[in-house]
Length: 406
Image 1: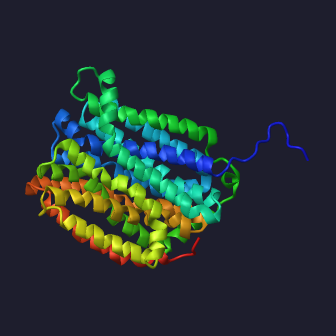
Image 2 (image 1 turned 135 degrees about the vertical axis):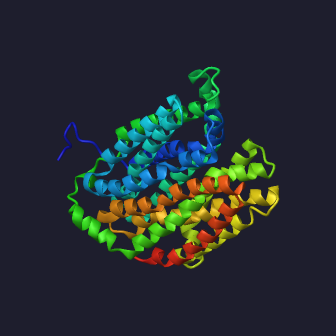
């Protein structure tokens, strides 16, 4: 039978995944932009380190809440609408910070960015589990993790440069032109990515599939100890990663590095992560599985952190490079778990729970480290505490080899 005039050939699975990855990269860049701009924001608005830590931390409890809710919603409604809703929240909140009148406005906009990212996160494993062929799911999980890690790297390293280009046009002669322009640049990039998602985003057969009831989805995930173990592991990972991303530039500046040089060194954490996530799955297989890889990452992370406070400028500078590999090997295995080892019908809910619990670490770490720095007069105690907490990741390693293999 001949196809009707309005029928279309289904898009290759790479198109919706690629569009979702573009939106995730831009949204994550908007989320992490504060790390690259925090010293300018503090100077312009006269903020304490604790207030700066609050701006770095406030998105994460909202990511946690909305990821749990969004995980259930994406299993029920599908990826297309949930990703668009999350993207619009990031667009409004992230772009609105460019015109914020003070600390409260920046905090509100950053909170909206966190809520939007919470909706976006569980969409990514859902797209992979529902639309990518089984033999390519590790590749799909790697691609969406690369997009997030790349967004983090760009958020730290490029926000200042993009703000320098847009800021003078946005606020001629204003002292806050650079950080305002940086926020606006990410909003423009995200707007373009959402237009692409609207054109090619997932809307196929997996969207129309009748899912299990909301209650059965929740019960199946809540009773899965492996999901809770992976969530706890991501909590530790994010506590370390986002505290480091937010405050290691200040620690390095205290050891003699320029602010730009310190930010560039810390941007190695996400940038080296791009290389790390591309080889995580084969590397884990080479050393005996995901369980051993998680334990190794926890040990390397603790060692890298413990060496930074007593070390000189160059030894401290090596810390972000080591963390770039160890934390991102670890991060990929956490983020890929729902797509690789959870049933398709539960992938969004499991992903939402893992992200929801995991990103509470991103809230607690930067705020607590900033407050501790105000009390102690230096970042040494906070960094040693992070090293000790990293070792607890070893206890979560058995969870990563539970469940069916892809």
